[in-house]
Length: 137
Image (cartoon, rainbow, N blue to C red):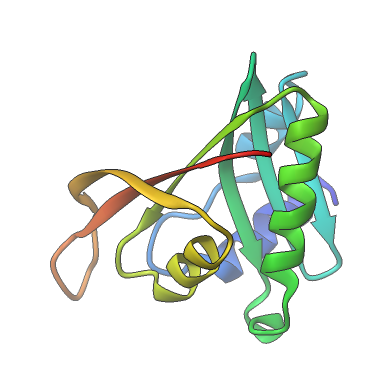
């Protein structure tokens, strides 16, 4: 996937917050620490520093949700991270993103912190950011 196609998919998947631009993806992908796993209808982007990985973002096309793409991307993401030396994984998710929360909890991730009112919402109060982690074994 190109930075442009990543930005287009990200915008379709993230309608409640500002999507990432083509330039953001270009900049991230230029780093040797950043890696991308893809599916024709989704992607996950991560960054490994020493022995830790952060899931920077994951997106699935709206019309392809609930088909196992996110779970498959997470499986490949975790394998790639381990292959790069990561033993501890981190991510952040909006507390009101129930499908993503279900994906992560079902994959063995646990809550490790919370940022109150982190994600602004136009039609309701800001959502908390849930910090999650997982030991990669």
